[in-house]
Image 1 (tube, rainbow, N blue to C red):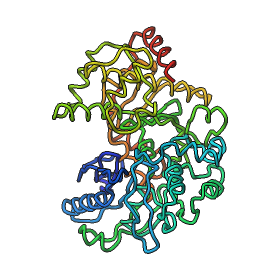
Image 2 (image 1 turned 30 degrees about the vertical axis):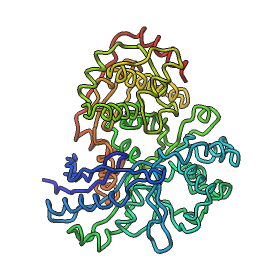
Image 3 (image 1 turned 45 degrees about the vertical axis):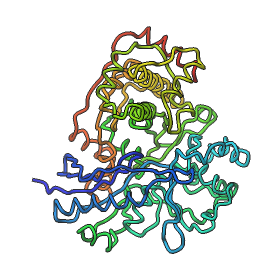
Image 4 (image 1 turned 90 degrees about the vertical axis):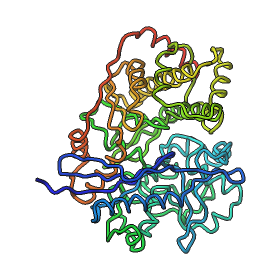
Length: 493
């Protein structure tokens, strides 16, 4: 029997985090959640901050749980997270301030101000990254315009996953896949865009060395290892962007597939070998983010389960109790189909707040009937998302010149059978759903690649296929009704 190796995947999501043990026997991986925690944010004096020190505390609790259960060192440790948000370090290596949440209001109107200095088309030509107000460059430019003293004191900027790895190793490096999400990485020069940084008056000197996914960052700091009951253990950069890790674990073969990493956001696109940066991709606002093994994640960021999550929070506040998702899905399934739609990416839906009222305001403005019952909102959220998937699938086909037959949905949203079926119906394509823990699979398998236990991305995907069962959703009838709904949806864009 092959020796089992265990890796620890530290997965930080913009809502919850997990420490997961991944046991690899040479053919398949079994995942075990060691510790689960909330990645909380707090508003102070009008600024929404991540509670980053608590992230580190819970990471240590996860590592301690591993040591307590297995009594030995893992083969490796790696951290992934969402992109764009960052922390700044001063010259002694300490964190200057808690990272600010990408949904904070400080970037309101900042994109337009930066584009007066660097035209949007110029930025896109350099980076290939979708213009979004949450991107790191706009967050940093807001500090420039505010004459923030943080920029004078900062010697290093690290995005969330790499910031966590820094506090585990003491080594400040930026992994490639997260670096590309900043809109400050030059896709042609394959380094930080010095021209953009200088034009925006963002200090180039605080940009750290960029490393490839599958790089060993360094050993676990002695103090952290001792505190957690571990010995010397390599800390590895996986695809540090959670979507890069998730896409690495898509159990696909061939090239006729699209992916959706489904959660709070739905990140939908194709895997390419080189970026596509031209007038058409700029006008469609498609992004070329870095992937593992030299790949490009050519994708669109779609506001995924966020609208429904915010509706649920509003209902909980109003009623004093939470609505469970199973009952909400049943209500959505029973609600009238094709009654109303919104554009999920309308910026009015980006910030936290009273989402039901915002949705109804959008419906009133477009002459559609307001949603009254919870099921109406659920049906609207899911059908709007399914139509957004159809539009994105068609656009990816047009921009790449390729034909796609299958959509792989991975991540937590792959469990949503109602949304999966609606997506298959809307797009007229087969949906393959799973794995749920795609990010943890991709994180741990890139550790295996870094340590020579797996040879390639193709081999890693075979391991995923050996390890999970995938659910299949075939398109059903009602093509005429979906076509009519799609024509109505397009008028909202």
